[in-house]
Structure formats: structure tokens, C-alpha cells
Image (cartoon, rainbow, N blue to C red; front, side, top):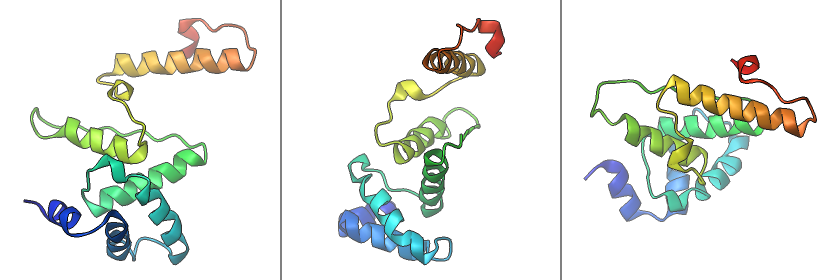
Length: 136
């Protein structure tokens, strides 16, 4: 059994939030503790507790996205090392409404998503329909 599993069995999610804030105290401003705890508590149903540093990174990514900044994550490695598992956990912490269909498994899929988003944005702004070559 891993330490995160032991902690989740011994503490309530609220206690785990406080414990995590304590572990991350040198990386969080005191003024961020309340915001971090509220963010953390909204993720209780995810059911996965992992590395404190990765949880903090997910919190920072959420802050960036809330400020209309984009964030891009690439996870690489040999087959069987846990890339998919890690990406699912990170995605769930960033967006509790995450669905597997949001993951791109290659450049082509990513470009297709960008093209679709560009078309939607253009239509919402009343701009003429963009051709696929204008987005590449």
C-alpha cells in the first residue's frame, strides 16, 4: 500500500486538504491556502491522491486556465510506464468533468481539435467560415 492510499484511509478529505497545504506551505502563499483548499475539496470524488508537487502543478494550471491562458502537457516514455494513467489523473485534477475523449494521442488528433475550435470561434465571432488550410 502506498503512502497516499494510507493517508486517504486515515484522514477525511478535508483533513487531507489541510495536510497537503502543510506539505506545500513553502510553495503556497498564505493568502492562497483558502483558495487551494476550496479547489482541493471540489476534487474529492476523483478518488485519486498522488504526488503533492503534481497536485500543486494542477492547481497552478487551473489558475492559468481561469486567466484565459493555455496550457499544454506532453507526457512521453516507453510503453507500460504509466503515461496514460498519469495523464488521466492530471486531467481529472485539472478538470473534474474530464472525459477520456479530451485526450489527444497524436499530432493529427491535436490539429483536428485546434481546427474545430478555430471554426467554432470564427462562427461565434460572426467571421467568415475558415478553410482547413487557414488554421494549420
